[in-house]
Image (cartoon, rainbow, N blue to C red; front, side, top):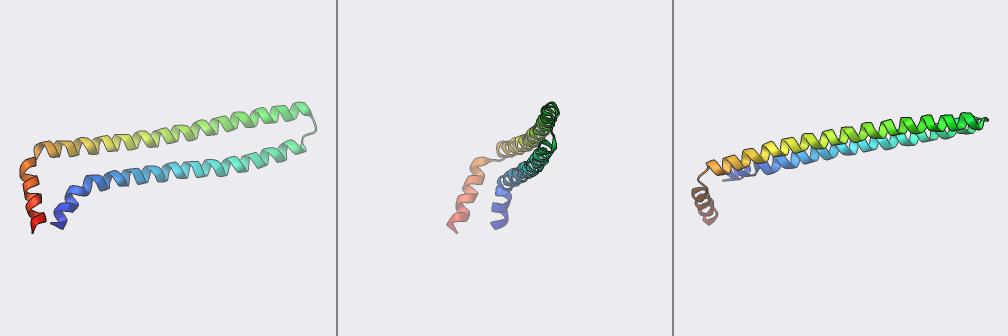
Length: 119
């Protein structure tokens, strides 16, 4: 009975694993981005403090902001990719589970399950 229950719960466990891996990927991306952002911000402050020419400071700031925008875009694309991959995996899993339920004799399975609880 335990093995049968494990078998029935496998799709749920697979979904949880997909969600866990996706969350880990997103957290990792965000962590890397925050670390990079702090580091690059500190470097930019140092660079700006060393510049004496206002025009050079503006140019340095514009360059920094363009690089920051590129990094933000890259992280966002990676996050969207991770979420899309998870969505695809979950869709396949749900479709497979629904097909298995449709193929199974549901009433007989429920009767069998109810009898096993009565033991």
